[in-house]
Image 1 (cartoon, rainbow, N blue to C red):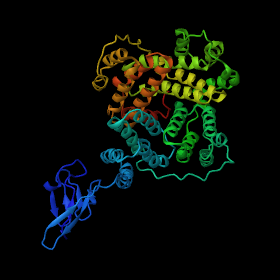
Image 2 (cartoon, helix red, strand yellow; image 1 turned 30 degrees about the vertical axis):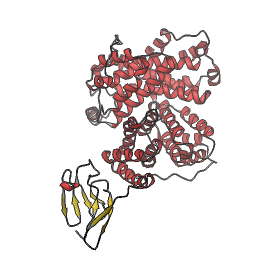
Image 3 (tube, rainbow, N blue to C red; image 1 turned 90 degrees about the horizontal axis):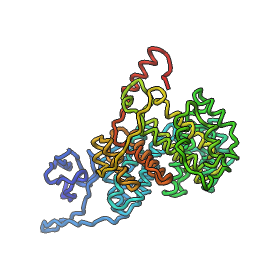
Image 4 (cartoon, rainbow, N blue to C red; image 1 turned 180 degrees about the vertical axis):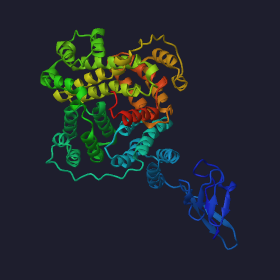
Length: 518
């Protein structure tokens, strides 16, 4: 080496001692995992994080002294923020975890750590943000409700999802704000740049104006199997936590996603229901109030769940006849939970059945998004979103209509460790544990969803999204059915990679030239 240098002994990777490694000139190698560092500066030359380097003084008599000065929290954060961004860009889960936890230890705020992932990821989604946005919202909400070490896992699940989905994508620039552009008009015309410019202008103004504009956009079409409403809900929930001053980064990309989403109401399979929705007097529907003596009946839920055609007129009649929008949402919530509880697992792994359990979860998460829209901005636009949820509950039954439904499980309460039961895929045990614990089981069910029960990002996103929707719907409706439905999805076997299903679909299409069966 060129002189005497002093480094921390602990390798920043996993803490093994560098003194057990090798020194070759200026190169220090940790023998455990072959990380390599510059002895003079501590810079990591192979691996991820740098190792701390300390000042060395050599006296005339040859005595060597090392001055170890612990950096301030501010100095630590200055080093860690760019390191975290580098880890996010490379999808290095270990480095992300270490940097995030070190940042929290140095006084960084949980929302700022999640925002680092969002700020990097949002521009790097060609078609706009999707499930990674929804997962980030639910993970951030979870982390904010926890404290100390319990915040780390949900926070990092969200950051990792943002990182994974941004890999390999170039950032998309946001056009300059343009308040002369009407957001709903630009989205309807599929003018993505105009929609992004309009959203940027809204982000600089009153949050309520932006909220109203985005809810109107979501009400124009049933987008991407309900995801338009879900992503809008999650985006505004994120902004409630991280601060409206960051809306100029988030909302333009949300507008891009909504502009490019599939408009299912113009497709043949939804056209009849769309005509029925268009014929509804939305002002009258929005004005309908829940009667004081109205109670949710099994008959209404059965009607919504088992109709042979999308029951738009019947749903409107129920709302006008005393249920109101709130009662209709309760019925949709219970119906969506029952759909999940009676799903026939025998068809889950059949490649030719391309509508599976993950798809059916959207019925409940979309009901939650529709309820959010109604709660934050009741009116005709939100009422129309609720009618889209009526159609989605109907459509989520298409596998049942082809294959039949299994009986809803009879559940006897019995205590149990939900995380362990879910890991063992003990569906009856998980249902029994949820029934025994009651609504208080929600955080433990979330832990089961966060505990890496799947190697697929898309499955983790749906596990967390469904569990959060179920927790909120159980609280709102007073029924345990949403939580039981989520527990069944978390604990039962399910398709996770979708390779076999896609191969089967590709073979059918290439060999027959026919589109897939819905």
